[in-house]
Image 1: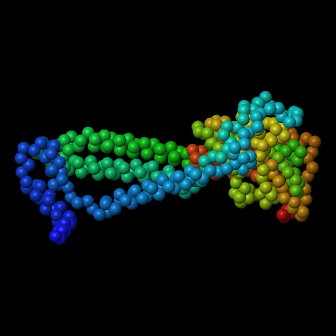
Image 2 (image 1 turned 90 degrees about the vertical axis):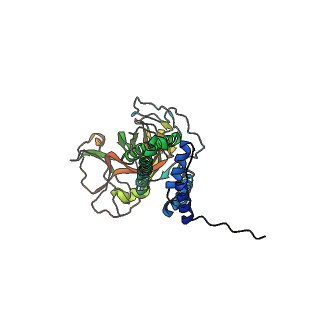
Image 3 (image 1 turned 30 degrees about the vertical axis):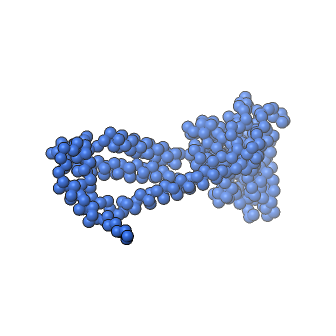
Length: 383
């Protein structure tokens, strides 16, 4: 026997069913059942666009989760020691120094291994900041749409004793309250991300010193920032000690020095082959130490909130055969605060660094308190 094919349920069938429900006498049915039947009878068929939004949003959510997992799996490894190698414990400096300050090391580096550093600076960070606000706006629009729909049904059923409290069950009220709280939370998160994107907690600390072997003197410019002058030695090395400070309320991890940006942004970069950063064996909370104390190659290191540490910047200079070496330092070069070079010089005013905070890696330029100036032996400078 051939089985009869079932009739398809489309818009005409739904309209006939709703018309039949409206015309049918509910009899002694409970009030709650009457309200449910009336709700089905008055409901219109959802638009096709709303039906497509559910699978689209599900696919978009799954894609976003996959991208976040992929970013979370990308760890920026250390540039110096291996991630699993513990930092050496602090101890006395290898050589005696007359420049030691009463500030002593406070202990080994906290967490110096691989760190989560998702590069979201620039347009990606701006999109991340806008995402919570957009989600909160869509959620509030959805809640408002549902509230207007409930108000219309309440007004239509008011004569039958159905008000807003009658057509909404406790579960619906709880869901709407949770939605409103979620929207408020998203707005707070968006404001925090906006403040995070506009701040740069990694800054210059409170100390900076040049290489006394090649130091020529200092000078205060009209703008208020100083310049310290060091003689350019082709193929040589110049050292500068400085403090880095975390001015924020959250810990951050300094991940790397951006040599590419340094070459583009700093005038003296054309005469420098590479920049090396060396760290002490533990967090120092600032201060000046003998150069031999900075025994560790650069690796990602953490700075606590309102904490700082010192490091050594070593500038490896190019050979530049056509450039004459800078003048020899005078006997009072260290105390010469009004030095003015008689020949050409180039400066380094900022150090481009990357740091990670809350798993987001950002770029910043740490402005030096005194620009490092390389003084040449003549005005003819080509390299």
